[in-house]
Length: 358
Image (cartoon, rainbow, N blue to C red; front, top):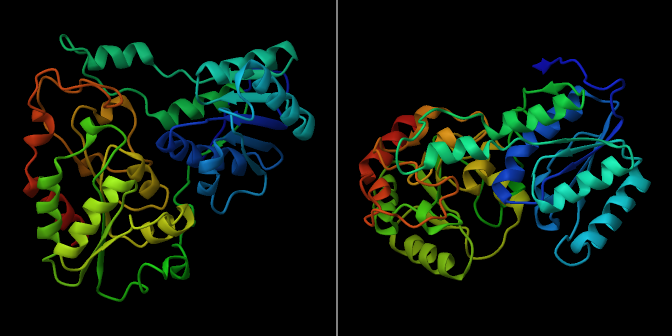
């Protein structure tokens, strides 16, 4: 579906610079919107600048999308480095508009460089004040806030661009090539059920207790014709998931090495369900149209960080007065017992998954 909108400027841009440097999940959330902008505006070139490590996410991009990996911590660090980055991109791609999907100091500097040179710029409204009201300890304003994707869309609309919101998957109506993940698994056989488990997150507060998650995996492994893939990275995660895969039948760990986005996304596209925290893996699975049973503790879908087109019914969470206490899950539990996660029984998660795959 293409959303038409009136441009606030006299003419629509032809070469749009878009910036979102981190985090991984936020870049994932931007991709369906950016692909939709490209497809709704085929005569507009979109130049997406981000961290080099995440450029591999942009699988099967539209022809008018250019993805640039820029090291803003070293090669383009500081005001001088950012000015040089902007000058290089502006000269090479004839940039005439800037969409800031990040709103941090770095992108605000690029915004200033744009305005000094007469380049139209629009910045995301993150709704920080509303998120504070939602997550404060008392008198919470408990209302759903605008999704991040909608906030991204608003930025492009203010630049006079149309939006196609019909993005389904990085693979369109299909799935990834099984050859891409042949080093992990043979192709999916008829009748098999594939489940992904991503038990980790960037912040400890967003991680469902591992001993309870292991119970979930053990019970799911009893389902006939099941195959479970464990997603994670880092030394500690690698050791934990390797032990799970050794103890639990029909289970494979992907944490043994870095497979890369192309491999993991191709595999995710064949999953019948993904079980994830409020984490990047939720958004990765969403990019390939895989339903996600997401587990929420200190954070909440009302903050606007749900996966692209994921059903709210698949969220596992408890209605308790202390949550949400954090937008990003990076705060200590002020009560001290982590009840928002520990009170979620393994059976609650298992029931969601079994209902989904049946």
